[in-house]
Amino acid sequence: MPTLLIKILTGPMKGTEKRFDQFPIVLGRSPDCALPISGDERISRSHARIRSVPQGFVLEDLQSKNGTFVGETRITATYTLTTSKVIRVGNTLVQLEPAGMAIERTGIPGTPGQPALRELVEAVLVLDLCDSTTIANRYGDAFALRLKEALRALARPTFSQAGVSFLKGTGDGFLATFPDLAGAIEATVRILHRKGAALPRASDGAPPMLRFGIHFGQTYVDSDGDRQGDVVNMAFRLEGVGSSGFHETRGGIVKDDLPLHDRVFLSEHAYQELQKMGGVPCRLVGFFDLKGMAGRHRVYEVLWKDISVPDEGTETQPVPKTE
Figure 1: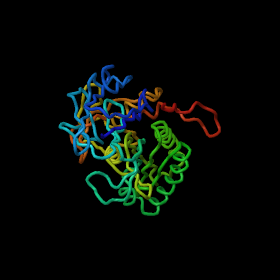
Figure 2 (figure 1 turned 90 degrees about the horizontal axis):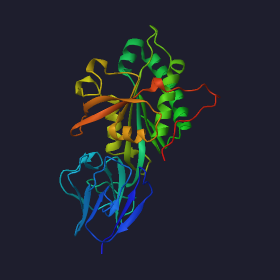
Figure 3 (figure 1 turned 120 degrees about the vertical axis):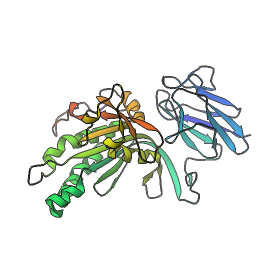
Figure 4 (figure 1 turned 45 degrees about the vertical axis):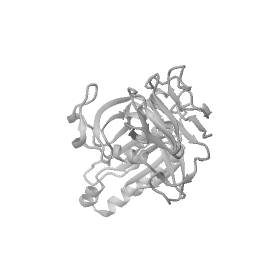
């Protein structure tokens, strides 16, 4: 008889797990569900159902208000599970493990034959130096190189201090992952506050500008430790969005006020997770069309200037950690 292990990875019920051998089962907030999930108001009372079929298991959304997601894709029809998967219901990440399927496995579904990958739930941060090509053309390659080296000298130890799990250069910036959002926010705020003193200015006094994109969710780790998947792609899209794909919404900002430099943009899911920490000021920006990702995506901004960073050697309260 097939069995399915369900683990709750985030939220108030983080660490809860239960194995099922009787189907169908329903996930939701109702106490009548096979696995009631409390503490997440974005989960419907009867949110999603899982059935056993010869091919594995079938996941379906029960017309929930906020949807059921596999990766960054909201499912609109039944979804067949033949391997371990992390899904999102409301703001809660849930791992579904069919019997015999470990977290480490060969390939991602749809890419057979790839090296073994692991799945992690991480905060993904993308940092980019704005207008690097223009900087090189206007001020010369020597200045551009000096600026990039100074950015590396600032960013690498700051990421390390904040507990980075993975870090790699991306030419004009970095891709970094952290076990939680607290580390990503801490590193981002410190870099932005310190860049004025740490990075060289151009001959006309123009200060260097940075952009950050932050998302939270399931990443795939290859045999070299590199991160892949939709969560990584989303962080890159958030870092690079501009006014052309922006849509104003009630409670957000107007197009003329859209920040293009020295900004920290968050996905909606990262924002919801961040609210559980408290003490991190944010605002709604609006909706964006993101290249290669269906639909419009609600984006938030961390108001980093409202977060103080102490001088070196000064004691302070750290950014709160998620539970």
